[in-house]
Image (tube, rainbow, N blue to C red; front, side, top):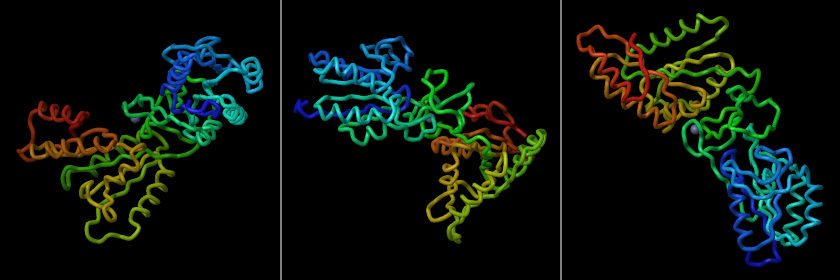
Length: 358
Ligand SMILES: [Zn+2]
């Protein structure tokens, strides 16, 4: 520290498994090597890896006082008045009182370093860390890796019996890999109990009159086997010349309404996914808005001319981070059809998705 009389607050935050504790330990160890006096706290509720020690998930440890609240921290500070550095792990367990504690010791000239979660399992700001971030001199937001796709994670996904926890489920449990996973925004899921939310299937074709409606009816027939399942269909087409005003706004409203009333919503896309709906905003852009609750079905014919179309479509869908469900080939009656299953299988492998021939 340049001026030892002026204290600082450093906040290390991010989702679970982002390496916050490791980073805290790294900073505290450096201070110890520099012969500075360090006092470290952890919450006594957090004894994932034993009674003492701030323990990171990699099991690198440093001695920490297990305390249950700020009052206990103050007692330990009374015995360590010459401490230069204060480290606090899992700071979110200490509630709002920790903010005044940090301010006080920063004013006394200490370097205070805290690590903790900034978001709850609902991905909402989780006090006191957001307030500490605001008054901090330095904030580092670390990122874990999404367990589904490997991209930088955003929040901690709570899983109960392997399924995403609901918004209404009680707030906080100390995390283990069985209960929590780091997830990116796309793969983070939080639903409300009692809220109906239809699953969306987009049907896209590789050419005109390819049989999307037929495939959609097949899906509906399949659902009819189950009781009380409600579904609806909308047809979505692009507008090249005559753009309706507020087309996107109206479409969003319509889809939202249908999602809240059905178990499944089928969206049959006519005319190609790169056509605009309003201004330069395309059907694909709109599909991406719904990517978390939707899957895409490519409908094609088993004829040779369609193979490249399928690969281009599958590639575009994947690069747009949409979920590709399957490719359905509708048999043609002309003699230009692909006879060899080998070709179709190879194409599916290249597209990285399963297929059906109907
Ligand atoms: Zn992801």
